[in-house]
Image (cartoon, rainbow, N blue to C red; front, side):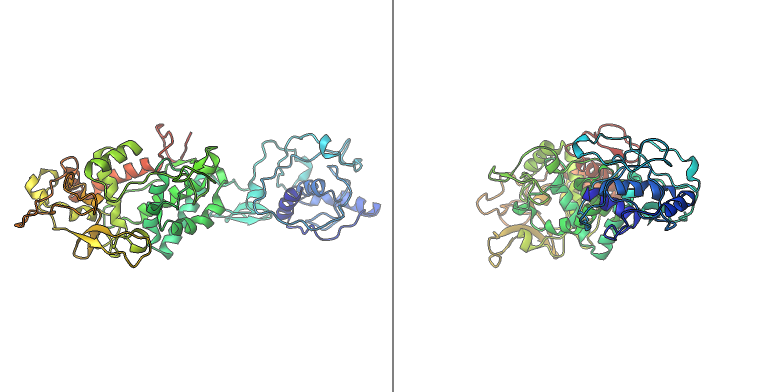
Length: 512
């Protein structure tokens, strides 16, 4: 009852802690019967619902401030306690608790409310806003419009007397309640709020993309095991999105996992560089959070743990030192991606930077000179300007990269790392694996490469080229729009990993 009363009080903008008279004079009741027709029927009907829930007789009509005639619905005696605390997440309320009084409404007498065990569900009523309450009939199939705006109204709507009302519609508009926000409205509003977050802190964009990948390994479920050192630093984007999740989660079946996916797709769209652009349309909604899947979560030690956003099920993430065959096998087993899709997805590293405190890799300047969603990632990995048609010798002759040891002795618990560097930029072993195959050319104990990126006059042999992937790198180096198209396709597939998105989707669709 406290939850229901609170919501109805919010709807009526009425302070239920105010004292109310236990009864009204017959003279006032007579005046009320005559004047009630001038009042707002929606206020009367919802107020009757309020009286039913808190068991208090109505003192006056809330709109005209006149005494109320005999009620349309039964109610009980006034409660002895008067302060109801508003809950954090009150349920949606429909007028399903109302009991019509017997006989004609004019002659109806207050009826004692039955004990809870005797209460039977009644058909739900939808209040109707009209200037002529005489001809109003109860409506079926109630919508939560009037209640929902106590929490939010999407862009173009504002909360007015408990209703989400179009900014172009006045309170007295005879059209009545404005249309409830659609699923598309909510997604657009989330995208707008994510855009604001990124505008205020551009470093969030690559973090949202990385967070989405870690979330979708094993299935996109809005949960990341932050105890896994590979996920260090992801608490930042999770907390940045917490207010958005709290505001929109459960609205139109939107989950935390959906909000994270929307944030990732929005980040990709906003981060495109140059004149080559594609539309990163968000198409699928309906992901399930790990705590809602009825599946127990386990940590890396196979111990049962609570399923939460930051303590989700432990997932095996790809190591930054994977060789070519291991890299392709991981993505084939996990996502079903082909070699070309893996190469396209790897290009997202052009967005990011690496910080020793989180990963042990020293990439404060990032992978490319001007971080953003572009094909710059491929520019220094292969030579030539004609893409696939260039000779192998030309492709292999790229910018030279040196394998360098990063000393992390000043960071407790952080091991030293090997990375590739040139002109202040960095690449991981897994990045270089799409152009060089280090199989048999790595010291497994130290992690050092035993070959050079380019042929040299020294006794160190040149690393073999990665025949399965190097042509795709050359292709994307010389065709940015094609890379963007292919990246969008594989990134979109990643964001529905664990769900059936095989159906044709035109616009925004709900995952089965």
